[in-house]
Image (cartoon, rainbow, N blue to C red):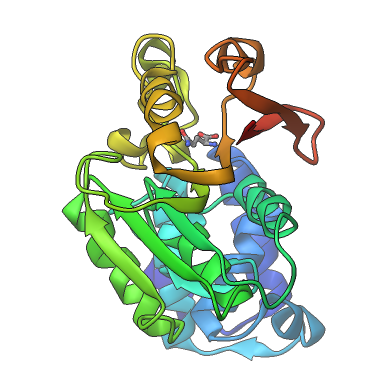
Length: 286
Ligand code: GLN
């Protein structure tokens, strides 16, 4: 480490060297990770950092950068290292207390937002809120709406509450510790969730980055559907007439998930994510 920080280097030199090290460590996206981490070490956006690539980097910032790279080599997700991530235009705190928000989940929020007109005042319930990303993005989108967000994990809820303050949405989202619907009261126009959906047997095969995330947020039981099954069976008691249940599901789970819905009661379908994977289920009570 000292050897690296002894000499003055430009941003581009540091990126080149870090990319090489991350490639050797077989991280998922060496160049992009190096860029995000250098930008964070400098306190700049990635674009601004790249725009002045020949600028020299001071010793303190270099030391911070190499400590970030070291953590990345150990498989820590970038968002945990920098402590934040962007989600639907909000900057959220991120750490080991909850799953890192994924781009797919932004798509879930965007599709769910289209269910209501701008200026609508939907009652929304977000199950397994984690960082609070879905609940907060919907609260930002529907200033007249009412959002309740639950999680079984007190640690995740503490992070979600931090994020509510950070985004100044704390008056608009009510957080509740609950095992799915257990402590939930009332009925909702939208129940939305990115529940844990990875089959237990597949957890150990996940990328090292994902294995750094809370098992509670990933483990969907034997077939991956244990929480989804409970949500589908209880949701009718918590939905308003014509209310919608919107969930993110695992790759290859779509047909098993659809089979959980009684077609006499529900209508709806599956939506693909940007990579063409059947990733979301939207269902409405008839
Ligand atoms: N999409 C996450 C992954 O790729 C899993 C999230 C979840 O279980 N809800 O690992």
